[in-house]
Image (tube, rainbow, N blue to C red; front, side):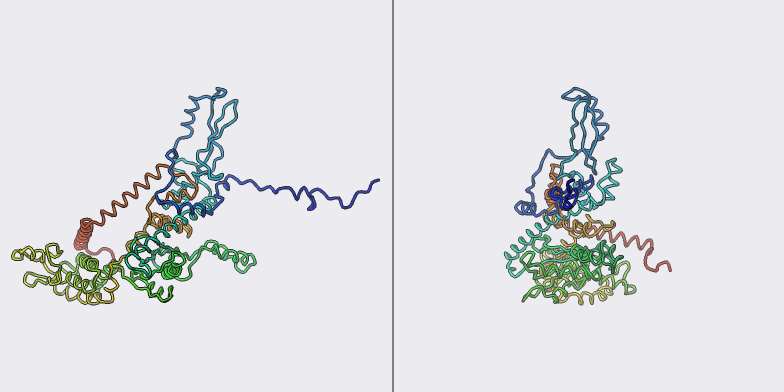
Length: 579
């Protein structure tokens, strides 16, 4: 009887060499996991992008999609074609359905089936699923909106939430690459133009904050910095007080499981702000100033501020640059609004000052506009600004018996009709309009004396505004609507795409599409080219003197109509009016 060795290795034991050498089999991906982008690293595409001009995109004129009724179209085709090989009837069915992607199965009685995808593949995922999510995000629509759209268009149900989230990560990475490249180019251009203008120690930027909600309850906000000469965005920062993962795990605080999670979560936590929503603007501005040298190798030496927050003071206190004193510039538009606010408050708090023929809303608007124009047209000199501002006020109280036009600009091109008449030698027939009442003039003169100071007007030299920042903010919230709930990642995407579109036009979205691995067809290219062309024409038209005057006149007409309606109807709405 032979002895059996006690050292014999049993099948399946750890010492089984066959087991050691066997490759571990991975679980095959299910139909939803296949749609997830495998690689969120877009650095290679980013390097390629830096070498391209913004309009240098590869367009495939043969690429595009059409909506068809599958049953109607392919039943009709089936009735008129036969198999090329066996001449039997051909049938068309669907398979491998994932979101809006599927394969058309062509089969007959004798031959092997053929499958035709309705969309190109990116790795193993249907391109169409990425495309519709990006397109809808450009419109400010999320997954629930896509589901409604697909349902009422009788399209298949889109991808599930987990796949959607992963595609959103891919869009975030791609749009981030494109926006960083855009801001880098904008900063270089701003630095070059500033140097050409003798500003060699740094550049001038305008900054402004915007929040998802009014007041101090907003969980999300963003702050943008725009170069003055180029009007292009050079930095933007989204601030967030909320992290969904933190909220979920807070329930398990104190457990070992929580400690392990917390150690790994810090780098991916979406919350990047502590404190009130109002402090987001201050903190973000300081952070962007502190990183300017590392990011763009430039210093922000002048800051255009709206005076609505302590941002400038806190920036200077933080001292982002050695041996550099940051100077403050006032936004002329906000100075103009300031005089309007003071006059409206004066009217509200002074009994009998308002009413027909007195300090009306129309008169306040006119004085505010003239105040702003006086600064803009004379922004190279404090004394010129002073003279022009007082000229607008004394012009309003001038009469035939006592004309007060000494500070009004002279000549035939003057805005002052009295000075024009003087240059044309027609003063003998000139008649003044009804003047501002004396009591109104005496009431508002102290407001002018308070605001028309050397300190304020010195900061207005240059005629700076924050119009570009406010325009950028509206672009962001169009893609992340305040009325809809969305997280930090969606606002990041909106800020990234808005940056590229703001700086380089809608054509920049094609680069996002390219970085995501999708094709660019003639439909998207033609739309981008058309929109960008119209944007340029609209901007040029809006800058014309005629267009500006038309806007002023329209506001004046609306104000007249509104005040007439209030006089006829009485005040119908206001705090405590029903008491």
